[in-house]
Length: 214
Image 1: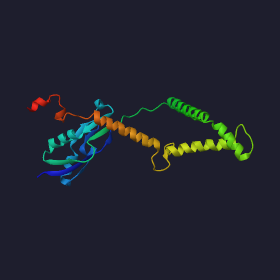
Image 2: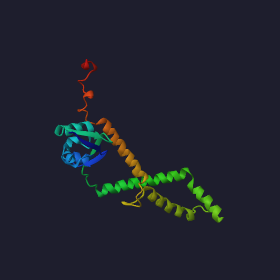
Image 3: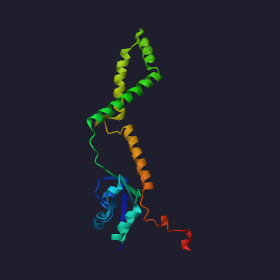
Image 4: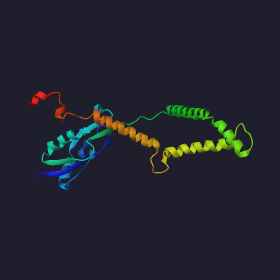
């Protein structure tokens, strides 16, 4: 009697070099418990240096490995048809001198960008005009407006990115995190389309030709 199993691959996972990947690491399974336990331990891939930074596990390759050990299992696939495995490589510590250089470069670039923007929109003239309208006096440097504006600009950037150093202000993702999520998703979609193992798909074989079926 065939055992009905539902399988849902994770869209992406993270693995370490040298790690052995089993079915339980890359998918969720639903079915009878007695049938699920042996399936969980099906070996799929060994992470090696040849894999570099990413590995794509295709559902047909996974099904081949499952049916090699359990040919009687009837599997229904739900959700993604590939799992992108990101290999986490231990990063080297950045030297304090390099960290200071990068910080100075980013700080200078951000300061120049803000100053150029303010110059383009004539922010000083706007502050002078507002100061004149509110107080009735003329001032070359309306610090009464410029100081609160500068503080508010910094606080606004903190609220925008939703972080104070490594501490999150609230659970809502920041625009930067959302953009990074979309960027990572685009990478995973690209790898799934270009790096999938097609060895289990006979219609992709170079040996196949329309005349071979005659």
